[in-house]
Image 1 (cartoon, rainbow, N blue to C red):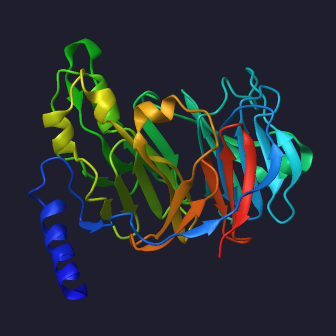
Image 2 (cartoon, rainbow, N blue to C red; image 1 turned 135 degrees about the horizontal axis):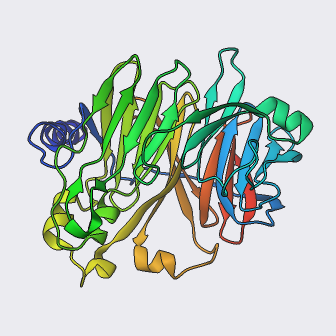
Length: 358
């Protein structure tokens, strides 16, 4: 039985992500049926967050809570004892302030190994000295990098080696034309690379379908070696290994595909067919985690409760499924501290919870 299953997997690999696939193609494909046995973990309350949470990030012994608070954008928690050690960042027009609550935030390592908090805004990216900002409860900006790409369509990540990784989302020249340009990952700078994982895009007379088909959360490791893209409405995960110039796709075979969306989804039935597969993700230099859902999207948007369960899958950067966990609450944002082995999550009531993963 095991041998037969293994052969079936190989056949799937050969025909799912190679040159013959019209809409999705990576250098290597792996499958996961999301039916592995999971470990059950109980979440424990850490604190109530008074403002709505935009995201969570972990680096070293720090958890960064990105909150919709104009006077305190970043709340910093020490993961060793879960105490709040600093708050900083304001919305305003000064050089050390932000025009709006940050939506795109990531970590990189400086040349000395210190963590730098990067915030992409519409016209520039601000590089923040995390340690000094924590010490003085004030945002210390190391650099402001002017951006020349359209914020609407581009996720831009400034890598520790000075290069720039971009994820260009599904885009258009004029929205009225209903003509769309495919998404792509690429690096510009001294090193130029490109990962064309979407060789073609679907066709449809329903513009909203494009946004659903290619909706993706993109994260990068602080070392700048790996990128992961988690698609929300299709159960596909894309790994980019920058050092090896290699792409890996992880596909759930029970999910509908881009081909299915093109042929079967339309304005009349999308509310009945569309599923919310992946909610969010987090990364470390050794692994990444995906917060799964799998419900119909209509049920997700109509619910505001922690009742139910959430499942998290942990993968290494070769795409191997390492472990899976079922939590006793339904949650949204996640972050993981690989020093203390603590997982942090946000519940629907904006409470911060944690648990130790073993």
